[in-house]
Length: 399
Image 1 (cartoon, rainbow, N blue to C red):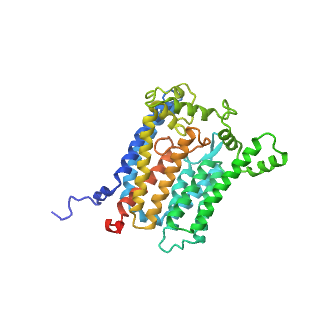
Image 2: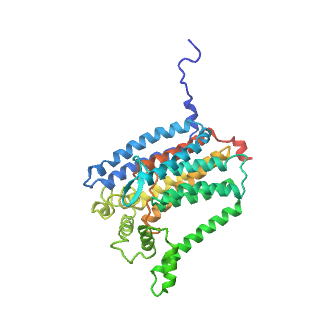
Image 3: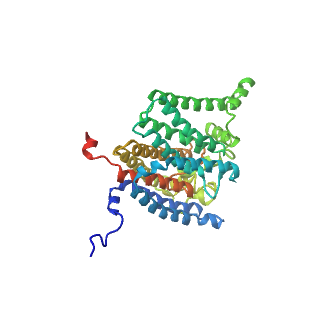
């Protein structure tokens, strides 16, 4: 008998180095997602909507296999194709504008997917490769190059239009620049400029909506918000003046708050949420943008807290993997993924409880959406690859 007979051609033992907390939290969130996608669409008339939970379950099952495959692959191999993926995502974003499918007033789909979601991961990988090089200069030019790299997909996503998704690129970029130690003064200036821009937009809308403002100021304020589509401006107006139009502009936001608040401590029970059953939550996106409202009404504060703890497990496990990474590329992949997940969770939940304007940002692993689920799976797979192939020795970590 030959010496190597009976052995597998690959070493599955290396998968034991995966971050178990991250894997278990991801699987738990997928299971919760399947349950509440089913609940959100259980009373719909459309057979397509009723069957979405099956597609979600199938994507979750495929996703677990994909995470294992990515974890087995050394993440440093992805550095060689980072720019190819980035350019491919840009090409798909251009294709959306040229021949994309329009749904709900926005052109975001082409070839049955949303390239803006995939662009999050490909841009993150390209940034990690750029900023994580051992010979990276960490100066203002590196900062500007990272900004330009991010600005291209942002501009294409804004043109769809999709303001919420476009803005996600900004905090991810800033976190990765901060971790990379690139031009600290420029980073602080950019962060301050971003906050100032938000304040100016909010101030301009307040000027337009306030009575007694001089016409000249009102026209200047309107020019300052020229880049906002009507529906985007209306969402901001609703967030600033929630009681002005509760039966029209503020309907979805108001019904979401009622659903979350009416769940109480333990909830009304699975498949027993009145806001969802009676159709007060928006039917087309109750399983996407407003999945947390369905969950909070049916499982209450207790169920919501469990989900938040699972997300905390995902984010802190990702940060832990970043801390133990041996190189800048792996560390920046993990910190970028942690920032991406945190922004999605924070913004979505803040939206459903009325603290932020309504946006189309889904919850990772919970919300239905094939392209976004694929994006989240790819992100976790990359982190697990860093966990398997990139940890420093414990003596080095403690040094």
